[in-house]
Structure formats: structure tokens, C-alpha cells
Image 1 (cartoon, one colour):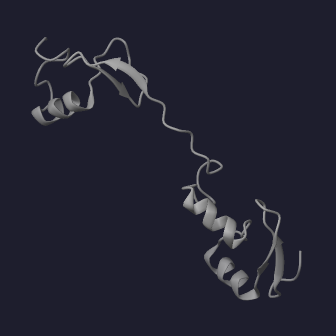
Image 2 (image 1 turned 90 degrees about the horizontal axis):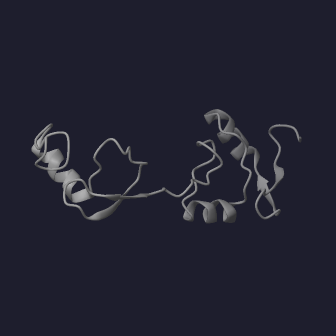
Length: 117
């Protein structure tokens, strides 16, 4: 690696293009404890626009899509989806029923489906 304080050419990990990493940028990155850039400006902008997690975040930036599970709401009986795997021994509610129950307070309608103890 070239000496610190000299401009460097870095190869983008996405497109393979070389881009400059100036001595001033190196100093800026070092002062803040950042690792050197791996992507050129165009690829960074493209990645940012796609909503990828910033470098240094959890994982590789490719967040898995949320998984939803089908349920029959214990309050109204309508089919709905929830973003967690429901426990068959506990009631699951659609968004509207959950919101209503939450506003009513704990144990407002008992532990089971609405209106049943």
C-alpha cells in the first residue's frame, strides 16, 4: 500500500473502476476512525439509493425481506398476516383488533379472543 499522505488509486469492489483517494480524504477518514472506501462515488450513490445498510453496519447490507405469516384474527375472525411466527397456544390479532385491544389496556377483554376469558 502506498505511503500515507500520498494520493492513492483504489479499485471499486462493485464495478472494478479505479478512483482517487486523496491524502486529504485519507486524513479525514483516519481522524474519524473510518475504514478506507471500497466503492467509487457512483457505486456508493447507487448503493445508497437502493437502501443498503451503510458500511460497518450489521451483516453485508443486504437485509432479508420481512417474512409474514397468515393468521385468523382471534378478535374478528378475519384472515390477516403478522410479521412474526404465531404461537398456536396464544391468540394472534389483525392490526385493527390489536390496536383496539392495546388502547383498551391490559386484560381488557380477557386473555383469549375478544369477549372470552
